[in-house]
Structures are given as C-alpha cells and as structure tokens.
Length: 120
Image (cartoon, rainbow, N blue to C red; front, side, top):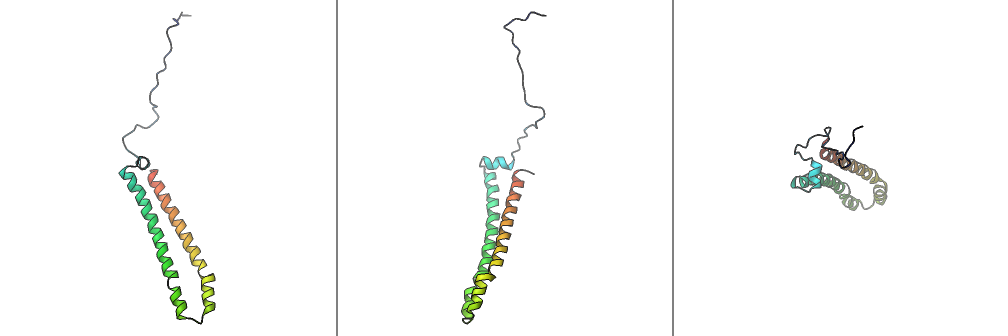
C-alpha cells in the first residue's frame, strides 16, 4: 500500500453534460414571452387578437339574432304567446350552440398558441 500524504486530496472535475444540446443562441418563443421582448409581446397580441375576433363574431351573431326581435314583436302586437315562446324557449338552443362554438374556438386558439410557443 502506498503511503499517501494527508495533504493531498482528490479533486473531482465536472463539466457540461455531453448529452445536452449545445445552446445555439436560438430563443424559443416561450423565452421571448417570459422576457417580455418585442417579439414575445407580438406573440401574446396575436393570441389576444384571435380571441377578440372570435368574441366579435359571437357578438355580431347575437346582435343579428336578438336585435330584430323587438321590431318583430312590435310589428305583431297580437302575438303575445309567440313572444313568450320565442323568448322563453326559442333563444336557448341558438345561445347554447353559440356558447359551445365560442368555447371550442377559444380553446383551439389557445392550443394553437401553446403549440407555437412550445415549438412543437
């Protein structure tokens, strides 16, 4: 057994992992958003713009669906039962379908945005 000097110590040398990919200077969109750069701001604004477009489409459809009803009811003053049927039952199906379309559209916009940001 060799006699070791107690002042000598083992030194462990470590370096970067060879398995990891080298950084190429390419920033992912998520990094751009996290660092609030101009490009990241543009990504977020594009999501907001598509969500706003879907909301405006829903609003326009609602205006076209519900807006003419007072004029229709004023044109037919003797049709009180029709008013109750239309307001009480007739509007629910289109509103539910419209809500489902909007939620599906918003979720799809967010999925597309996440795919873009996660670089998939």
